[in-house]
Image 1 (cartoon, rainbow, N blue to C red):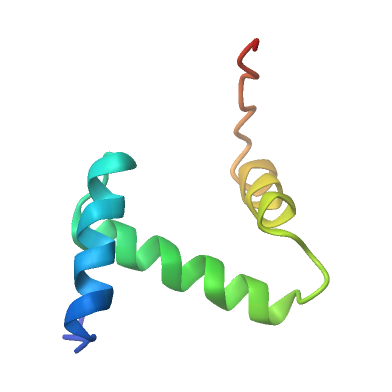
Image 2: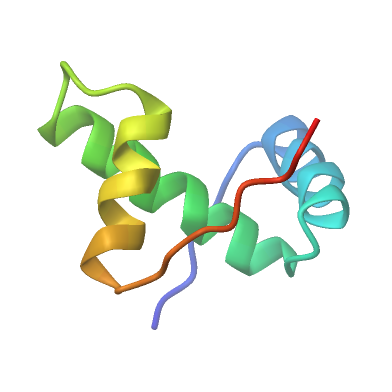
Length: 67
């Protein structure tokens, strides 16, 4: 584990997003880093496709919410 220095504005955005997503600030930043890394490695995939692939790899079956 290490310390990562990030811009104050980005830290504030991570803080706000972490509240919405019910994650810690660190977990939110880690999520963004992981998704960003996967997006760079898979430039033709959308965010939703990346998340679906991660769910499948973890044997998670998301439940669809009726509109």
